[in-house]
Length: 410
Image 1 (cartoon, rainbow, N blue to C red):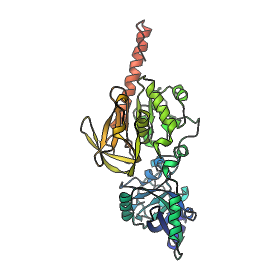
Image 2 (image 1 turned 60 degrees about the horizontal axis):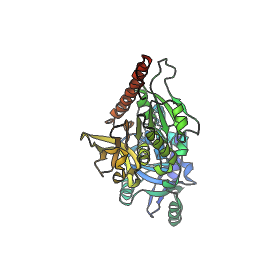
Image 3 (image 1 turned 60 degrees about the vertical axis):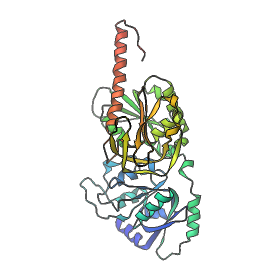
Image 4 (image 1 turned 135 degrees about the vertical axis):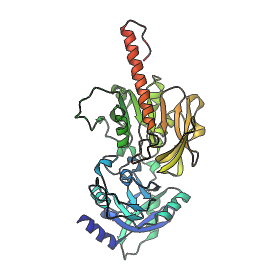
């Protein structure tokens, strides 16, 4: 019934997407059509994967953004509840060329249209996504306003463009605070808590907008996962007794999370060889923590086909990415002990950092990518191995002390 009502609404309405540079694109609404009466605002970015629209919708890194999907057919496998990456969708709107009303997937519980309508996210179909993508590629990420009108209405384009220009850029918004756990609400991530098992090494994930599959990948490597809100301080973090810390992905500009940067800097300064891994925003946070700078990319990296080379081995992997900022390679202080570990083969931007001697590293892309690619899942194996090495080293030190040997540095 809901979908039939939405389809009728589509035939009666047209959507207009106005960009801050004056360009306008038209389409038809689906999903939460009523939300477009007041308009949706945000930055407009394009993403290139052929699958994964559900994961994109629920990726907190898209908070404050309208996402254009370049693959033309969207919705054909429906929505599977098990595949969400967060507790709710975060994007402002989903923009597609063709929405498929029919879907085929034995795991699907509902259509994309019904899902978006239920969670209050508008979609637009019949949009010239190729022209829009080329425009964003040539002119950069744009602020935009999306609104629905009656099919026979006269649209005041100048007024729409003026509204688009008034949209605040993501660099001025504290979007991490919107997607993170509430202050003081640290919690264990454990969907298998009903199963009895012995204690395992503990990883604290700093929730700046983490994706569920990061936690899944850690747990699959016999690591317990504790989620900490983005405003956790050093004493609170250490009280959780972590064996490793993961700086997660998230939305917005890294300069807007100065508290997390300070936390990362404090962890590095402790010099106790606590393994630290950064992903996406966490990579940028690590860069700022060691004294490097970051800058904004023209249209960002959003997709599942970005080639990245590991500098040390020459190994090339295909990666999933979703970010608008980069660590500036020339700004990395030589005295920091960090070097560029990975490079994007398309534009030469920094895709990874690593310390020469300490168990600290980060990547700009998503090794946990869901639905894929999975080329670099081995980075979680590396992180788990670093944690295991530290745990075993401390256990051996404690054993020597218990036997009356010299106490080793922990």
